[in-house]
Length: 80
Image (tube, rainbow, N blue to C red; front, side):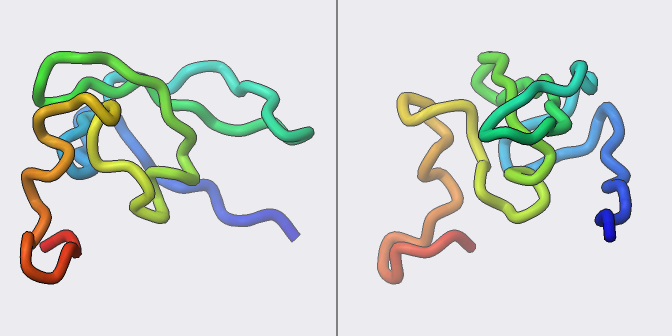
């Protein structure tokens, strides 16, 4: 049984990423995944899967992003 389609629209925010548009499906790991073009608060653009956004796996554009640890509680090493 297929999962219900996630409602993700342009302008939705995931951490420091804002959805710009949905891209054509891309085949990865033997399956076709919904892909989103995102803009980070630092100005970089990145492409992530809808699944990664829904399970809160990504919050910024990359490891070099200055916002990567901005929401992290330094004492517990967890995101606020």
